Length: 363
Image (cartoon, rainbow, N blue to C red):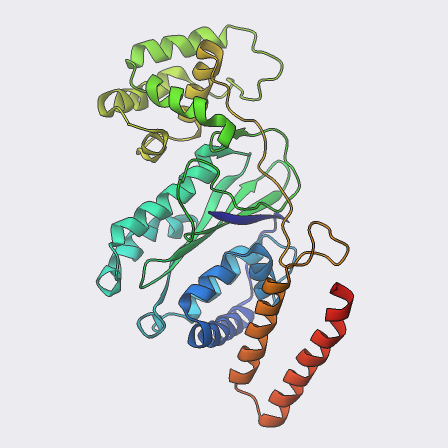
Protein backbone atom coordinates (compact mmCIF):
# COMPACT_ATOMS: atom_id res chain seq x y z
CA UNK A 1 0.00 0.00 0.00
CA UNK A 2 1.07 3.56 -0.47
CA UNK A 3 1.28 5.06 3.02
CA UNK A 4 1.49 8.70 2.03
CA UNK A 5 3.08 11.46 0.00
CA UNK A 6 4.53 14.86 0.75
CA UNK A 7 4.89 17.90 -1.53
CA UNK A 8 8.03 19.99 -1.14
CA UNK A 9 9.64 23.02 -2.82
CA UNK A 10 12.02 21.92 -5.55
CA UNK A 11 15.55 22.80 -4.44
CA UNK A 12 18.75 22.12 -6.37
CA UNK A 13 22.27 21.49 -5.08
CA UNK A 14 23.51 18.93 -2.58
CA UNK A 15 24.49 18.61 1.08
CA UNK A 16 28.07 19.66 1.90
CA UNK A 17 30.42 16.73 2.46
CA UNK A 18 30.96 17.47 6.15
CA UNK A 19 27.20 17.35 6.77
CA UNK A 20 26.54 14.27 4.63
CA UNK A 21 29.24 12.28 6.44
CA UNK A 22 27.64 13.09 9.78
CA UNK A 23 24.16 12.32 8.44
CA UNK A 24 25.33 8.88 7.31
CA UNK A 25 26.81 8.11 10.74
CA UNK A 26 23.77 9.29 12.68
CA UNK A 27 21.40 7.47 10.30
CA UNK A 28 23.42 4.29 10.89
CA UNK A 29 23.26 4.59 14.68
CA UNK A 30 19.55 5.42 14.79
CA UNK A 31 18.71 2.59 12.39
CA UNK A 32 20.77 0.12 14.42
CA UNK A 33 18.94 1.08 17.60
CA UNK A 34 15.50 0.57 16.05
CA UNK A 35 16.44 -2.70 14.32
CA UNK A 36 18.05 -4.14 17.45
CA UNK A 37 15.11 -3.20 19.68
CA UNK A 38 12.15 -3.72 17.36
CA UNK A 39 13.35 -5.52 14.26
CA UNK A 40 13.99 -4.50 10.69
CA UNK A 41 10.27 -4.53 9.86
CA UNK A 42 9.66 -1.67 12.30
CA UNK A 43 12.31 0.42 10.55
CA UNK A 44 10.57 -0.20 7.22
CA UNK A 45 7.23 0.89 8.71
CA UNK A 46 8.79 4.09 10.01
CA UNK A 47 10.50 4.94 6.73
CA UNK A 48 7.19 4.43 4.91
CA UNK A 49 5.52 7.04 7.12
CA UNK A 50 6.02 10.42 5.38
CA UNK A 51 5.91 12.29 8.69
CA UNK A 52 8.39 10.06 10.48
CA UNK A 53 10.63 10.17 7.40
CA UNK A 54 10.47 13.97 7.37
CA UNK A 55 11.28 14.11 11.08
CA UNK A 56 14.17 11.69 10.55
CA UNK A 57 15.59 14.06 7.96
CA UNK A 58 15.22 17.00 10.32
CA UNK A 59 17.01 15.12 13.11
CA UNK A 60 19.84 14.45 10.68
CA UNK A 61 20.08 18.18 10.05
CA UNK A 62 18.62 18.75 6.59
CA UNK A 63 16.25 21.55 5.51
CA UNK A 64 12.79 20.46 6.61
CA UNK A 65 10.97 21.95 3.61
CA UNK A 66 13.43 21.06 0.87
CA UNK A 67 12.93 18.45 -1.84
CA UNK A 68 16.58 17.57 -1.28
CA UNK A 69 15.72 16.03 2.09
CA UNK A 70 14.41 12.93 0.29
CA UNK A 71 17.43 12.24 -1.87
CA UNK A 72 19.97 13.20 0.79
CA UNK A 73 18.37 11.17 3.57
CA UNK A 74 18.06 8.07 1.39
CA UNK A 75 21.66 8.50 0.25
CA UNK A 76 22.88 8.93 3.84
CA UNK A 77 20.96 5.83 4.93
CA UNK A 78 22.40 3.77 2.10
CA UNK A 79 25.92 4.96 2.84
CA UNK A 80 25.52 4.57 6.61
CA UNK A 81 24.37 0.94 6.34
CA UNK A 82 27.05 -0.03 3.83
CA UNK A 83 28.82 -3.12 5.19
CA UNK A 84 26.23 -3.71 7.92
CA UNK A 85 23.48 -5.13 5.72
CA UNK A 86 24.12 -8.79 6.54
CA UNK A 87 24.20 -8.18 10.30
CA UNK A 88 21.13 -5.95 10.40
CA UNK A 89 19.23 -7.87 7.75
CA UNK A 90 18.32 -4.56 6.10
CA UNK A 91 19.23 -3.53 2.57
CA UNK A 92 18.99 -0.27 0.60
CA UNK A 93 18.90 -0.20 -3.21
CA UNK A 94 18.43 2.54 -5.77
CA UNK A 95 18.72 6.28 -5.38
CA UNK A 96 18.58 9.38 -7.55
CA UNK A 97 18.71 9.58 -11.35
CA UNK A 98 20.86 6.93 -12.98
CA UNK A 99 21.38 5.21 -9.64
CA UNK A 100 17.65 4.46 -9.47
CA UNK A 101 17.96 2.35 -12.61
CA UNK A 102 20.45 0.10 -10.83
CA UNK A 103 17.83 -0.98 -8.29
CA UNK A 104 17.13 -4.44 -9.85
CA UNK A 105 20.86 -5.19 -10.10
CA UNK A 106 21.44 -4.19 -6.48
CA UNK A 107 18.55 -6.35 -5.27
CA UNK A 108 19.76 -9.38 -7.22
CA UNK A 109 23.29 -8.90 -5.87
CA UNK A 110 22.14 -9.76 -2.33
CA UNK A 111 19.63 -12.40 -3.41
CA UNK A 112 21.65 -15.20 -1.78
CA UNK A 113 21.11 -13.54 1.61
CA UNK A 114 17.33 -13.38 1.30
CA UNK A 115 14.60 -15.76 2.43
CA UNK A 116 12.50 -14.84 -0.62
CA UNK A 117 13.06 -14.72 -4.35
CA UNK A 118 14.94 -11.59 -5.41
CA UNK A 119 12.76 -11.34 -8.53
CA UNK A 120 9.69 -10.78 -6.35
CA UNK A 121 11.37 -7.67 -4.93
CA UNK A 122 12.52 -6.52 -8.36
CA UNK A 123 8.91 -6.77 -9.56
CA UNK A 124 7.59 -4.82 -6.56
CA UNK A 125 10.17 -2.08 -7.13
CA UNK A 126 9.29 -1.77 -10.79
CA UNK A 127 5.52 -1.79 -10.25
CA UNK A 128 5.63 0.87 -7.53
CA UNK A 129 7.50 3.13 -9.95
CA UNK A 130 5.15 2.28 -12.84
CA UNK A 131 2.02 3.01 -10.78
CA UNK A 132 3.26 6.44 -9.70
CA UNK A 133 4.43 7.28 -13.22
CA UNK A 134 1.83 5.82 -15.59
CA UNK A 135 -1.02 4.52 -13.43
CA UNK A 136 -1.41 7.84 -11.61
CA UNK A 137 -0.47 10.71 -13.95
CA UNK A 138 -0.40 13.69 -11.61
CA UNK A 139 2.22 15.85 -13.33
CA UNK A 140 5.27 14.62 -11.41
CA UNK A 141 8.06 12.77 -13.22
CA UNK A 142 9.76 10.22 -10.97
CA UNK A 143 13.51 10.90 -10.71
CA UNK A 144 14.35 9.26 -7.38
CA UNK A 145 13.53 5.69 -6.34
CA UNK A 146 14.90 4.01 -3.22
CA UNK A 147 13.85 0.44 -2.38
CA UNK A 148 14.53 -0.73 1.19
CA UNK A 149 13.94 -4.34 2.22
CA UNK A 150 14.80 -7.00 4.79
CA UNK A 151 15.81 -10.65 4.55
CA UNK A 152 12.22 -11.83 4.91
CA UNK A 153 11.12 -9.88 1.83
CA UNK A 154 9.25 -7.04 3.56
CA UNK A 155 9.91 -3.81 1.68
CA UNK A 156 9.20 -0.11 1.50
CA UNK A 157 9.67 2.39 -1.31
CA UNK A 158 10.54 6.07 -1.05
CA UNK A 159 10.37 7.76 -4.44
CA UNK A 160 10.06 11.34 -5.55
CA UNK A 161 8.75 13.06 -8.66
CA UNK A 162 9.45 16.52 -10.06
CA UNK A 163 7.14 19.14 -11.56
CA UNK A 164 9.34 21.85 -13.06
CA UNK A 165 6.39 24.12 -13.87
CA UNK A 166 5.15 24.42 -10.29
CA UNK A 167 8.68 23.96 -8.87
CA UNK A 168 7.37 21.32 -6.51
CA UNK A 169 8.49 17.78 -5.77
CA UNK A 170 6.08 15.10 -4.57
CA UNK A 171 7.34 12.19 -2.49
CA UNK A 172 5.56 8.83 -2.52
CA UNK A 173 5.85 6.21 0.23
CA UNK A 174 4.97 2.53 -0.12
CA UNK A 175 4.94 -0.37 2.34
CA UNK A 176 4.56 -4.02 1.36
CA UNK A 177 2.38 -4.90 4.35
CA UNK A 178 -1.18 -5.36 3.16
CA UNK A 179 -0.42 -5.07 -0.56
CA UNK A 180 -3.14 -7.01 -2.37
CA UNK A 181 -3.38 -5.22 -5.70
CA UNK A 182 -0.85 -2.85 -7.26
CA UNK A 183 -3.39 -1.32 -9.63
CA UNK A 184 -6.51 -0.81 -7.50
CA UNK A 185 -6.41 1.70 -4.65
CA UNK A 186 -2.84 0.99 -3.54
CA UNK A 187 -2.77 4.29 -1.61
CA UNK A 188 -3.39 4.11 2.12
CA UNK A 189 -3.03 7.90 2.41
CA UNK A 190 -1.59 10.81 0.49
CA UNK A 191 -0.67 14.03 2.25
CA UNK A 192 -0.22 17.10 0.07
CA UNK A 193 -2.19 19.85 -1.61
CA UNK A 194 -4.55 18.73 -4.35
CA UNK A 195 -2.98 19.12 -7.77
CA UNK A 196 -5.68 19.60 -10.41
CA UNK A 197 -7.35 16.61 -12.05
CA UNK A 198 -4.82 13.90 -12.89
CA UNK A 199 -5.57 10.69 -14.74
CA UNK A 200 -5.99 8.11 -11.98
CA UNK A 201 -6.17 4.65 -13.51
CA UNK A 202 -5.58 2.96 -10.14
CA UNK A 203 -8.75 4.32 -8.52
CA UNK A 204 -11.61 1.97 -7.67
CA UNK A 205 -13.90 3.83 -10.07
CA UNK A 206 -11.42 3.20 -12.91
CA UNK A 207 -12.07 -0.55 -12.84
CA UNK A 208 -14.05 -0.52 -16.09
CA UNK A 209 -11.41 1.65 -17.78
CA UNK A 210 -8.68 -0.75 -16.66
CA UNK A 211 -10.58 -3.75 -17.99
CA UNK A 212 -11.48 -2.15 -21.32
CA UNK A 213 -7.97 -0.70 -21.79
CA UNK A 214 -6.52 -4.20 -21.35
CA UNK A 215 -8.93 -5.65 -23.92
CA UNK A 216 -8.22 -2.82 -26.37
CA UNK A 217 -4.49 -3.48 -26.09
CA UNK A 218 -5.14 -6.83 -27.82
CA UNK A 219 -6.32 -5.03 -30.97
CA UNK A 220 -4.15 -4.72 -34.05
CA UNK A 221 -1.79 -1.71 -33.84
CA UNK A 222 -3.11 -0.25 -37.11
CA UNK A 223 -6.62 0.03 -35.69
CA UNK A 224 -5.48 1.69 -32.46
CA UNK A 225 -3.31 4.22 -34.31
CA UNK A 226 -6.22 5.01 -36.60
CA UNK A 227 -8.59 5.51 -33.66
CA UNK A 228 -6.18 7.91 -31.94
CA UNK A 229 -5.77 9.96 -35.12
CA UNK A 230 -9.56 10.12 -35.40
CA UNK A 231 -9.81 11.28 -31.78
CA UNK A 232 -7.29 14.04 -32.40
CA UNK A 233 -9.67 15.55 -34.94
CA UNK A 234 -12.61 15.51 -32.51
CA UNK A 235 -13.71 18.11 -29.98
CA UNK A 236 -13.22 16.37 -26.66
CA UNK A 237 -15.81 16.71 -23.88
CA UNK A 238 -15.11 19.63 -21.54
CA UNK A 239 -14.81 17.31 -18.54
CA UNK A 240 -12.01 15.31 -20.10
CA UNK A 241 -8.67 16.03 -18.46
CA UNK A 242 -6.45 13.92 -20.72
CA UNK A 243 -4.69 15.91 -23.42
CA UNK A 244 -3.97 14.50 -26.87
CA UNK A 245 -1.45 17.18 -27.73
CA UNK A 246 1.64 15.19 -26.73
CA UNK A 247 0.44 11.84 -28.02
CA UNK A 248 2.03 10.82 -31.32
CA UNK A 249 0.11 7.81 -32.70
CA UNK A 250 2.85 6.63 -35.04
CA UNK A 251 5.37 6.47 -32.18
CA UNK A 252 2.98 4.30 -30.18
CA UNK A 253 2.61 1.73 -32.94
CA UNK A 254 5.65 -0.25 -31.76
CA UNK A 255 4.24 -0.47 -28.22
CA UNK A 256 0.81 -1.45 -29.51
CA UNK A 257 2.47 -4.22 -31.52
CA UNK A 258 3.96 -5.58 -28.29
CA UNK A 259 0.63 -5.52 -26.47
CA UNK A 260 -1.07 -7.13 -29.49
CA UNK A 261 1.45 -9.97 -29.59
CA UNK A 262 1.55 -10.60 -25.84
CA UNK A 263 -2.14 -10.00 -25.04
CA UNK A 264 -1.79 -9.01 -21.36
CA UNK A 265 -4.45 -10.72 -19.22
CA UNK A 266 -5.09 -7.82 -16.85
CA UNK A 267 -4.22 -4.18 -16.31
CA UNK A 268 -1.35 -4.95 -13.93
CA UNK A 269 0.28 -7.11 -16.59
CA UNK A 270 -0.32 -4.37 -19.17
CA UNK A 271 1.14 -1.68 -16.93
CA UNK A 272 4.15 -3.85 -16.12
CA UNK A 273 5.10 -4.44 -19.76
CA UNK A 274 8.38 -2.92 -20.89
CA UNK A 275 7.79 0.21 -22.96
CA UNK A 276 4.28 0.82 -21.67
CA UNK A 277 4.39 4.29 -20.13
CA UNK A 278 2.16 7.29 -19.43
CA UNK A 279 1.35 8.05 -23.08
CA UNK A 280 0.38 4.45 -23.83
CA UNK A 281 -1.96 4.31 -20.83
CA UNK A 282 -3.32 7.77 -21.66
CA UNK A 283 -4.10 6.76 -25.25
CA UNK A 284 -5.82 3.53 -24.19
CA UNK A 285 -7.85 5.36 -21.54
CA UNK A 286 -9.02 7.85 -24.17
CA UNK A 287 -10.20 5.13 -26.52
CA UNK A 288 -11.82 3.28 -23.60
CA UNK A 289 -13.88 6.29 -22.60
CA UNK A 290 -14.72 8.01 -25.85
CA UNK A 291 -15.50 4.89 -27.86
CA UNK A 292 -16.67 2.43 -25.21
CA UNK A 293 -17.91 4.64 -22.36
CA UNK A 294 -15.47 3.28 -19.76
CA UNK A 295 -14.58 6.51 -17.97
CA UNK A 296 -11.47 6.57 -15.75
CA UNK A 297 -11.11 8.61 -12.59
CA UNK A 298 -9.66 12.11 -12.73
CA UNK A 299 -9.45 12.55 -8.97
CA UNK A 300 -6.15 13.08 -7.21
CA UNK A 301 -6.26 10.51 -4.38
CA UNK A 302 -5.27 13.10 -1.79
CA UNK A 303 -6.50 12.91 1.74
CA UNK A 304 -4.76 14.26 4.80
CA UNK A 305 -3.24 11.80 7.21
CA UNK A 306 -1.09 12.77 10.17
CA UNK A 307 1.04 10.63 12.42
CA UNK A 308 -1.14 10.82 15.53
CA UNK A 309 -4.14 12.99 14.73
CA UNK A 310 -5.10 16.18 16.57
CA UNK A 311 -6.54 16.97 19.98
CA UNK A 312 -9.41 18.89 18.32
CA UNK A 313 -10.34 15.90 16.22
CA UNK A 314 -8.83 17.17 12.95
CA UNK A 315 -7.94 15.58 10.64
CA UNK A 316 -9.08 12.76 12.95
CA UNK A 317 -9.07 12.08 16.72
CA UNK A 318 -5.77 11.17 18.29
CA UNK A 319 -4.73 7.58 17.63
CA UNK A 320 -3.61 6.77 21.18
CA UNK A 321 -2.23 3.33 20.35
CA UNK A 322 0.03 4.73 17.64
CA UNK A 323 0.92 7.67 19.89
CA UNK A 324 1.95 5.36 22.74
CA UNK A 325 3.87 3.18 20.29
CA UNK A 326 5.90 6.18 19.18
CA UNK A 327 6.67 7.10 22.77
CA UNK A 328 7.67 3.51 23.53
CA UNK A 329 10.07 3.48 20.62
CA UNK A 330 11.61 6.78 21.72
CA UNK A 331 11.99 5.53 25.30
CA UNK A 332 13.59 2.27 24.24
CA UNK A 333 15.86 4.06 21.80
CA UNK A 334 16.95 6.43 24.56
CA UNK A 335 17.86 3.48 26.80
CA UNK A 336 20.04 2.04 24.10
CA UNK A 337 21.66 5.33 23.16
CA UNK A 338 25.37 5.60 23.68
CA UNK A 339 25.20 8.25 26.36
CA UNK A 340 26.19 8.41 30.02
CA UNK A 341 23.84 7.15 32.72
CA UNK A 342 23.05 10.65 33.94
CA UNK A 343 22.18 11.87 30.45
CA UNK A 344 20.14 8.72 29.79
CA UNK A 345 18.04 9.18 32.92
CA UNK A 346 17.53 12.85 32.15
CA UNK A 347 16.31 12.00 28.67
CA UNK A 348 13.85 9.44 30.03
CA UNK A 349 12.62 11.88 32.68
CA UNK A 350 11.98 14.48 30.01
CA UNK A 351 10.04 11.96 27.91
CA UNK A 352 7.99 10.77 30.88
CA UNK A 353 7.26 14.35 31.95
CA UNK A 354 6.23 15.31 28.40
CA UNK A 355 3.92 12.30 28.15
CA UNK A 356 2.31 13.08 31.51
CA UNK A 357 1.64 16.68 30.47
CA UNK A 358 0.24 15.64 27.10
CA UNK A 359 -2.13 12.82 28.07
CA UNK A 360 -4.73 14.83 29.99
CA UNK A 361 -5.20 17.22 27.06
CA UNK A 362 -5.92 14.31 24.73
CA UNK A 363 -8.64 12.73 26.83
